[in-house]
Length: 133
Image (cartoon, rainbow, N blue to C red):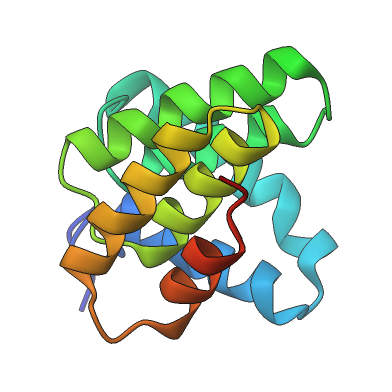
């Protein structure tokens, strides 16, 4: 019995999330990095406004360590949140980048927005308390 192409396959965005979890867990991240990068490039072209794809594009931009990379990451994360991201990590990273870039009111606003979304998340409160004012 043969399977029809595409049937029972994992959606690309789900696969991207799996690669992210693998890299966060430290499990042979190098092995999956090439696959993840290729998949992200494909998704950036086909689903550029996906709330899963945008933060990964941001993290890719941030990896260069340049001010332009930070600015691009802020734009990607802000867009993901604007489109309805519910990932606490997106809120935390965006607030951190705003704070590092001396956009403190924006950092506080994003943390408060994250708290309204996930009121039982300790990291959001810790970041808000440690945010310079």
